[in-house]
Amino acid sequence: MSRIVRCGLIQAANEEPADSSLEKIKKRMVDKHVAMIDDAAKKGVQIICLQELFYGPYFPAEQNPHWYDLVERIPDGPTTQLMCEIACKHRMAIVVPIYEEEMTGLFYNTAAVIDADGKYLGKYRKTHIPHCLPGFWEKFYFTPGNLGFPTFETRYARIGVYICYDRHFPEGARALGLNGAEIVFIPSATTKGHADYLWELEQRAHAVANGYFVGTINRVGTEAPWNIGEFFGSSYFCNPDGRILAKGSEDKDELIVADLDLDQIKEVRTHWQFYRDRRPDMYAALVAE
Figure: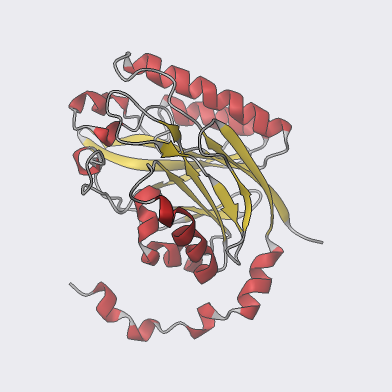
């Protein structure tokens, strides 16, 4: 009998002007996502992932310590606790990207992973932090992640997380496969004009090279006052052959749903023996200083 898992991705536009209070910004986006998660539950979704920094705008478009106050602790902060309750209510595993405070003044771009019984399983912290393009000033806000590339055994599948800029680095994608990921979720915030042509290319390549499913998310719309470009949505699932199974629009809030047949992982890895034929004894120079 096939092992089929119904998964969902949520892409959404920021609703509240950036000059509103942080409390109002966060509440409006959390409320929007809770409603979309409820809709996903009605469609039978078993694992869902939200977009990068889901409860606000993509604030690294500027360098302003005002946004430091969006941080929360994980797992004790209000958003993680709320999502634990929602996960339990819907019997749905949830990947929740949050601006995390580990201690005063030490912040990470993080995704909390919650199982279908509401249990907090752990977190992934974004490893690669960009600070190289106008409007993507992430080193002002985030410390590079220090938790490696963990995977999480949910009720339905073993999953991993990579976040946005991480997707340009094949090393972590391979590590997630070696750590047993069956599905890798990649929440992102990406605009047209500099990376859209890579959007399908890179992440489908990760699926092929590592023999797992990928579900990747991009927000939609433009965000004033920065207007660094249009977030072009196009969230999608692809299988271990790199074939797209479901894809979202470029310009509207959307729940993308796909049924992932995890038995395909064995079929693909039997055909393409990349794990058998890799040569880690030859790769030391790749990580040399």
